[in-house]
Image (cartoon, rainbow, N blue to C red; front, side):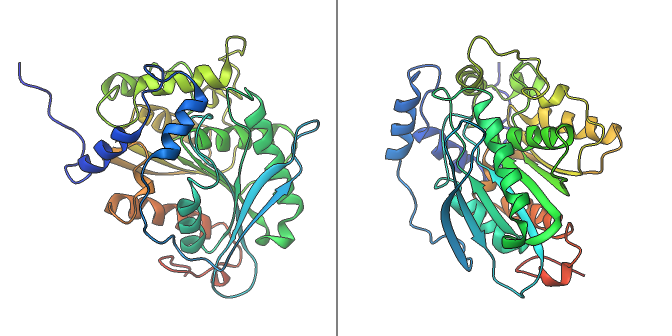
Length: 330
């Protein structure tokens, strides 16, 4: 029997393979989160200079009641002065891995291309802090940003939540909490190949189970670390794809065709749209999970980043004041 054709774009295959080569065998040979983090920390990193922005500041903000303060990193763009959007960004990593440093380039690029102030959030990670720790941290960070928007983007009508992978799940859950807890009001949610359903049983989980960097086994291990044995996996704040979508803010959803999470993102966009929520999508059939981190190498990543930047820029009532590289503001 002939092997199935490779659905990954040929120019993306070397990057997916290179990422697979340094990624720990989660749920297999590697079952300890600390070991997984050490393996990733020891992986070689490139010397490409990060995208330039005007300023980057690390600070802490109040966490949820009874929880420690939250580390955040605030990115400010170049360009004309005046009100601009504020994006509260949650990094990916399966709720277990990654942090402010791993997503520094992504946040810099989003800041530069959109003209928005970006607040990247260092939420508590599993399994040391299981659900709802990260989710409540995310909501606390949003509330802080809303309360201090005059010192951030200075446009209270252009407050955005964003994230990739598990961070996309946190962004979706934070939008649900903001709706159900009386605010703050959101202009937009940016969901980049979001991790939305612990059932892990969609067709794309089967079709993309192996061979495309992130595997179905990795994702199931992430969910087990985050939720543990006692969390109700049908809770809509855990499983955003099962939540009531009416009344949520507009969304821009990025998906990759060679990603186990593809169907979750596409399905959630469909549910939002059916409930009357304005949704735009960027689907990249030949791409893999994590591709947007490679705008220097992949045209599809540059396209995805540009679509996110334009979606953010459109939230501002003062669009002529958020002109920046690559973003049309007319």
